[in-house]
Amino acid sequence: MIHFSARGNINSFWQLTELVPPAEFRTHESQITPDQLDEFETLICTRAKEREMATFISTNPALLTILLDFSRAGHHDAWVIPSKAIRARLPAEPAGAVPSFIIGGKSSGGIAWIAVELKGADSELFAGRGESLQFSAPANVGVCHLLESIDWCRKEQKSLREEVQLHGLTQPKGYLLIGAEEEFSDTRRQEMKGAWNRHLAGTLQTRTYDALLRAGRRLVSNYRKA
Image 1 (cartoon, rainbow, N blue to C red):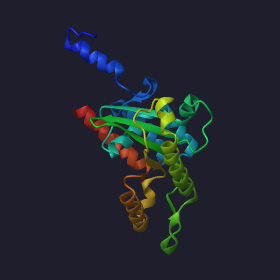
Image 2 (image 1 turned 180 degrees about the vertical axis):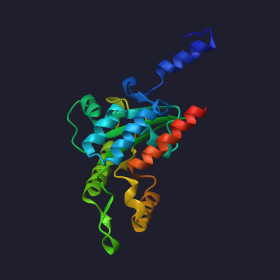
Image 3 (image 1 turned 60 degrees about the vertical axis):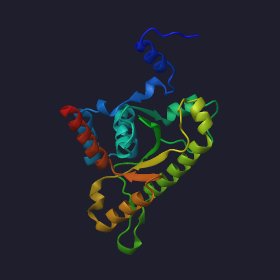
Image 4 (image 1 turned 120 degrees about the horizontal axis):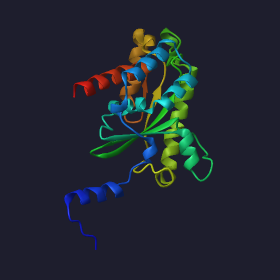
C-alpha cells in the first residue's frame, strides 16, 4: 500500500503517472516572441516557398500552437511533433501519408490533436477567376495529402499512441497552411474559403500564414498584459 504524508506528494504522484507526449516536443503559445513573429512576417511578405516555411516552423514550433487557439484548445500545455520524429519512433517505415506535423493541445477536457500540412506562402488556395474558380495545384495536393494523413492517423492510432506516445489520439482535425491574405481581396475567393471552413469545421480547415501571424501577435499582446 502507498501512503502519502502531504498533498504535495499526491500531486507529484499524479504528475509522474499522467500520460502525456514526450517532453522533447513540449512547447506553449506563451513561448512565442515578437522577434519570431517579425521573422515570420518577413517570410510571408517575401512569399517564401514551402521548404523555407517548413524550415522556419521546424525551428520555431511554438508558432503552430496558434492553431490550437483557433480550436480553443491547448491553453494548459502543447506538443508539436514533426513527421521525421513520428517516422523515427514507429517500428517500421509507415505505409501512408504522415502529416508534416501533429500538434497536441491539452485543456481541461484532455488532449486535442491536429494534423498539419504546409504549403508555401507563395502559393494560392484557388486558381482561376470568375466561373472557373477551383483549387490551385498546390492546394489540391495539400488537401489530398491532409485527408490521407487524417485517415492514416485513424488507422494507425494504436501505434501512434503506443510507439510515439500520442496519448488519446483517434482521428485528428486537419489544418492546411497556405498562402497570404492578399489573395482574398477577391470577394468570391474569400466567400469560397469561408464556405469551405464553415462546412468542414470539424474535419479540415484552411488558413493563410497571415491569419497565423495575426493571431500570434494577439496572443503575445495578451501575455504581455497578463
